[in-house]
Length: 219
Image 1 (cartoon, one colour):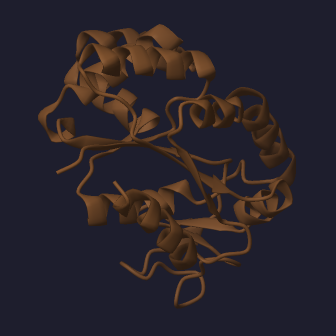
Image 2 (cartoon, one colour; image 1 turned 180 degrees about the vertical axis):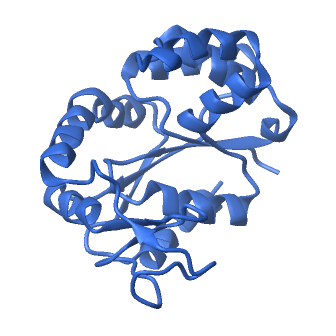
């Protein structure tokens, strides 16, 4: 079987989490997100986890070298041996360069970078309409991906709540940070010949996933 080492790219609110769930289910890849990796490393009290905890307890950003060390440890675990899905990492070109060097040292490389393209104004609307289940954390959108019954989760009937920072001013700031720090990865991975786009603007998650699935099935 051809190994799939996948990165999901897209602005805040582009639907990466929703697409990641489906990719994991269909392609049997471990979903590796930066936040989850850091929390797991801290819980396991690994060397890098203890280092990350020093920053997390202060509410400070975890430095690149620590995040990269946590990623290295996570990708060395058995479930990632045949492929993985990275979500939220890399966030910058220097992180991408470090990831490439790390994988090359293990005789591996990124095979697919899937960019979910959504116009900035739609991202604002999506995030402002985002709700999550207070019980299981499943994410919905009141406009683009609503629950079957208003205000409650399809899975467990939990109340759907809105995050305090899902307001327009904060969202526009987050989009600005993404465009400044993360969007340059589009050019970086285009030059390497591994980036493909799935246009998500105005499309339902099922429609976007049809494009994502075709991209990954081509391996």
